[in-house]
Length: 196
Image 1 (spheres, one colour):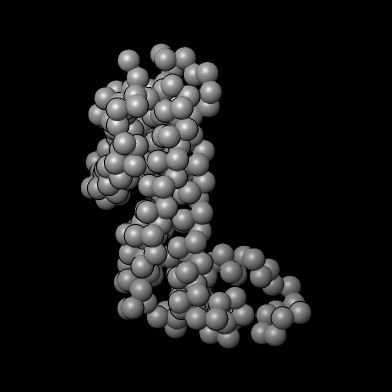
Image 2 (tube, helix red, strand yellow):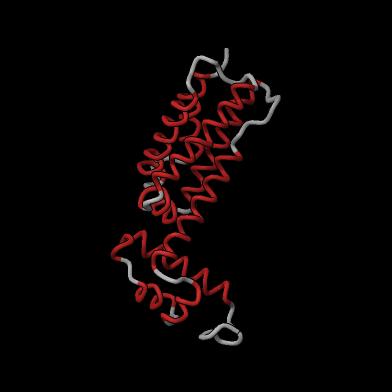
């Protein structure tokens, strides 16, 4: 039994509670203004209980950003198109992958605010997202889906920039749905680079 924890307590539930409250606090107040004392007060646990799970505020913040980044990179990887997709289904498949990413942002607005915009690692994470999308597009180009005329790294940079701005101004404000934004992006980007 870990010191400071009740015999019948569920450590995973407590850890999840601390993470959820920390996400709320970091999203509302930012990293520097968020206090461990406020997190534990809202969780109705003691500070020693907090330190059973996280060594510091920095550690819990890093765990939050890792959770976000892992889910986003998985969604980006999963958006790779499969071989032998019929041309009439191509736009629908691309749109589905983008819709999944925007839906993740919509369903996790506080986590998105922290992981995609506020964390110091957000810039590096977006760079990794660009690299993954570039890799996907290069593979898809080899499958014959896209023209050889466009540098896919620039398409990926532009797409991630659009995702970033549209998430901030449309998804997190509730102005547009994930499917609507994905459709516009597919029409703008992928119709133009689609192999004719």
